[in-house]
Image (cartoon, rainbow over all chains, first blue to last red; front, side, top):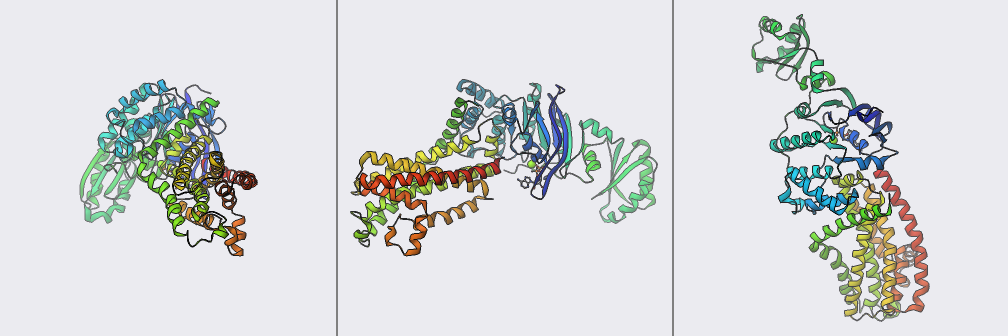
Length: 325
Length: 261
Ligand SMILES: Nc1ncnc2c1ncn2[C@@H]1O[C@H](COP(=O)(O)OP(=O)(O)O)[C@@H](O)[C@H]1O
Ligand SMILES: [Mg+2]
């Protein structure tokens, strides 16, 4: 096995009765990187993660973590990884410190080891002041921090985080991104899921876009974006003229430098070879077809464009709303 | 896995249940202790006159009822014992525990140990209250030890049933309906409240296949009759409970494996 590969997933499948959660999922994770699974709700992200952390047996395919099979060597895998579940899996009646003490026992750490580690982690996630309050008095962000501290308690080589910033306010999200980057600096490999494009773009070294239970594309955010080839123009058309969009699309599509055109609710997304040259041509077509434009915007390819190109639809939740709790 | 690791896990997990309880003292007092004392004191006094002492074969109704109430406590605690794991399953805490390198059984064992420790204490409270009301244990302190042993043994199977249900149902609503559906007939179709001889024929038949009946019929003579009458009943109860526990553990383990993988 290539020492740089810490997780090797091959043709993984999982069915729940008649529901196929994931199908033929294959990827590798390299040592020390932040690897992301990006996809909408129900894409199969959590299912994939649960198989890797050995709490769910796969229906088909194989997965190894640090060279150990998740089915036949589950116990070894468990002792090497940390897990931060998607739900706020906290016990309302225990204090933050008691959560960590419990996990210390479950990971077979000695009393002194556990206490030293707890102090360290409480400092990392800024929960020192709240460590001795029961978790039911915690805010959503605090519970998340506790979750993360729990996942880090056993000094894991790999940490699995399932939607670590789901439903958090902006400050908490940024702080959690910060922790995750700190972990990478310590040489810990991170596998995380997200349905936020921005998060995947900013945080992940490599990512796999997953949709409908299958992996659509894998690469670094930059690779994926340049892989689309070219930049994009977004046209916003005046409200009352949206019925002209299909015709405008055809007209724009016919231009030589245009590679692809998609209709979005307010206008068109146009993928072009060279924005300087195509811009005037696009405006000309709009004028010829008597479409009045509200605005036109040029940008380098974004991860949004990558997502649409590989799944055929947008990803809702690209801009997270405020905290759910 | 070493024994030392196993002990550490079970201890840490049991500690969790103890800590939770210490945060919920009030609810413990009222949901667990109070209803059983209610049965003993109020029903014991209420039916004192209505009950025919000849049929009961006991000095008074309360001393007859004490054995039933002890076993009912075991039943209720045992059957409710899995519910905390159901909440753990629902909110992801179970998954977190299962992602750690623990032996799968230590979660279950910790729960059993905790539930049975609480049940043992409650049995002692019930017998003390009964003592205050004049119920004298014919077999004395050794009798109490045997009663506790029978209770713990019955608790194994009951806790296994409870956890089996917890790991099989879709929601805790289902769990509680199923629990009510199970526990009431188990109480009424047993010798907890009246002796079998006072029941209509069909009820006697049903009560005879109810393990509750055999457990109560072993506990009761320890309280009201004495060793001579109790020993054969206790021996029989141990045999029946061994079979009962084996069946329940088998079913519970199957449900657990299906849910946890
Ligand atoms: N325990 C389960 N039983 C039945 N279906 C499930 C179960 N877990 C997940 N699924 C289904 O599998 C699909 C993928 O779910 P999941 O992996 O949770 O997606 P994601 O984490 O990307 O939102 C969904 O359609 C979901 O309904
Ligand atoms: Mg999920």
